[in-house]
Image (cartoon, rainbow, N blue to C red; front, side):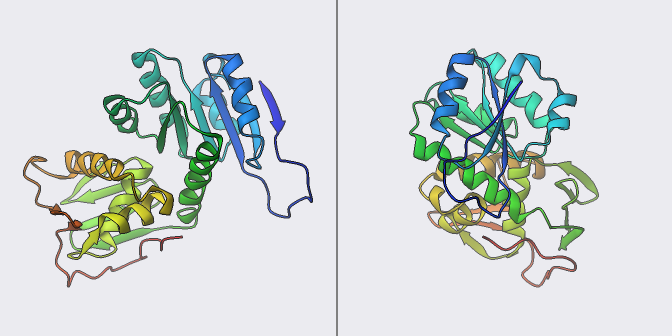
Length: 256
């Protein structure tokens, strides 16, 4: 396993650098990725994916994981699932090609973001930074958030609805928390994208559609006829709980 700091030369910052774990399937590609990340101001640990198991991944305690998986789809998705199950930290995946079906399948594994190659160096650095910022908003969130019949647990990113406990991925939890911050009110597509993903994602509305689908599949009795998460055509989405159902405990984290 290789560890290297790729902070650019200059005055030392007082703020600690985030640790990025680069998991790769090809050592040559990993070398090029390290060069591409040279201006991102990160401490990078690089490891072949095949040599890392769940216990060692947890022991490394990265702030974020950048996964450059093998090309075959089955192995790619298997790698995503393994990494997601081993860490609650943000996971950004580099997909080998632009493919809407592949993007949906990758995000369905619970990873935080998927960037299709070829991608520019600035976009790669921006996606990593955005994932880190999203995670920091929830670092200090504790306890439970109750609104109407919905209970959100910040300790384990789970929800409870009608006495039924539902496991959510970090991104699903953030989106549901955002909707729950304004029960009964419509949140526009742009507001949801900005608050949950970041301002740089406001034009990536396909992400929002995918995660609304994932939430409905987990929360709705019949996802094809949603009654909890409703679409307001051309505007946005609302959580169908009474507006009078004020939160009874800790509020959802405010947007950055």
